Length: 539
Image (cartoon, rainbow, N blue to C red; front, side, top):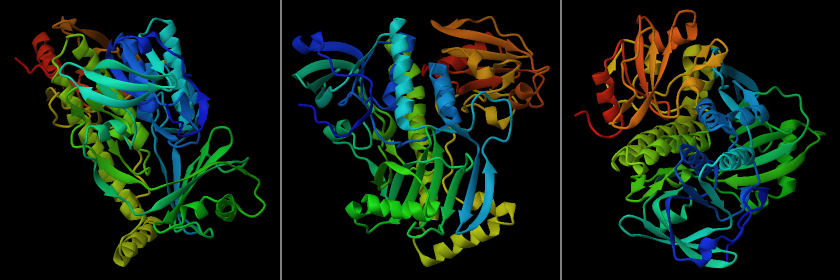
């Protein structure tokens, strides 16, 4: 029998018996275990490409509570490509400004997106249940258009066995167990990954000795739509730090840092939570508690994300502290990286070894996120008296001196990883802007009434600016779309892609990372870079 571990906010895929439960094990090209934001983003991406995918989830919808709430610009750009981004932006609370306080004093404020010319904002606040619901809604729309995606709720993985060219899966349901086969099994089953445990794989890193109380509070308030963070907050019993964020539906997210040695049951008692919230908001504030939780965070990752026919993504592969909103955002980028590679391998357009580059690239991203999260945590919770003196001195200097502000660390907010120097990169033969160098994600740019990222294809794209594209529409059966633009009259395109160059050619991957760039390029140049990007070498 499938255990129900949490309450459901939206029932999105109710249990229904399927014929496979009474048949010998059926083979599926891709089985994803875990219906969270990473699993659903990956399923939607694969299905839209035409690759059959089955999602198994041990519940029939998304759990209650805000959980991940900050979704970054790159995540929204990926969601736009998948068709769900605009609904997320419309529902979400858009914010760019953050303020940092020390006690009663405001230290400084920052703007995450001070420039124009991007379709997506720097961040939105949106409760995770909505994020998942909008992905599933888009999956339903894609299914109606023929996308080969199936979701089975209340189907729990209970066992697995790798068998050469497939993985045999034991699945339990309200009607009993059955078996299926997966050519590729993708573990999106969270930080406590049962698949990782079944395989006996390590999950190494640091467990931080601290606890944080989350409270979702429903209230009408005139606070600005900004991120407010306090070091040593002035509110009674607020702990070492506090955070206030606005969410949709008049829900406000409040985090309190409680310390390590706590009585969890006592701290979660509504009267004690209300006492802390009253101290922050002021006596007489009218609100209701919608959802509360206490978490202890960790910064850990697996050594490798691919283990033969089993691939790990999101929190099952790596886990970070919540400061900087790097968990869900990084996980969605995992899905973005993996989908096109898995699709090409299954179609026979790339060697199976291309999947090793998923682990290579996303492990670098995980290490970057863990480093930033660890530094943020160490700044928030100094481990010695001298560390606290240093931290407070930095906060004091930051009030009046801009040079000290980059040293203040209340969570370096999520940005996409640049795959500098990694194996799928081609040549960088353009003296162009650093932000669009090889390995970087393509930067959006307003083009009249349109935006650049919306005009890139779902496959490989040759972006040619003020130069003709070489006569090449595919490499070994992999199509290449051409996008020819002029920098004249487009200051955003000129600034972000040309710099001082007169012309440019960019080869861009399906996940919108830049493979190679040149001032001008021949068909041979592009062919060699494409072979590299497909894991075939340059010969």
